[in-house]
Length: 231
Ligand SMILES: *Cc1c(COP(=O)(O)O)cnc(C)c1O
Image (cartoon, rainbow, N blue to C red; front, side, top):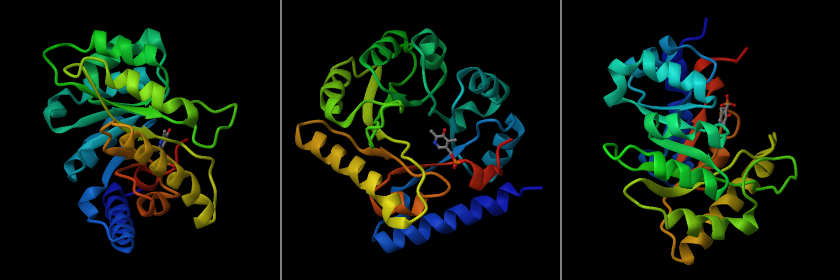
């Protein structure tokens, strides 16, 4: 039996320690609890322990959970962190607070068109293929500025470009973990130097959250360290 309560405490302890060694305020890093494959009851339990931000990968699974937890909706922030096909943008635009996985303009355009006007703007991050591997999803670093400029030009009452997200290759040694996180931070800095106003670096997971915090992550996406191993 995993205890979400003690896992949550341990992840927060790791985040606090990493923030302290980076000389950062622990409050500058948001913990996104990745609840994919775990039932709504697990989310409800984590919410009861004070967790407010949840990340999901699969649109239909997420919509079902959002529905099942409708009574908590005003106290939960839902983040889509998995791939988004253009035929699924409408329900996502209506149900989520953030989408981290925007990798082409068409997706952002559809989200902007379909975001209900009674809702606040949908927060967007561009998913970057930071190591440039051909098989990986995400926009290539060299194409990120043009995409960011185009997304930032969409109606800001519908979508707001907040930052960058990446899923680097797993690595076990700390230096190898830090290199792609540093590259993503430097890419965000260079976009901001070109006039963009990005404030979010979504990087770091259960295995490498320390490396991500040391390189400037503002949001870490943690699944198994909170909810246990996925089936
Ligand atoms: C599953 C997933 C995570 C969480 O991974 P863990 O190793 O379980 O912490 C983070 N980000 C994305 C995009 C994921 O798909």
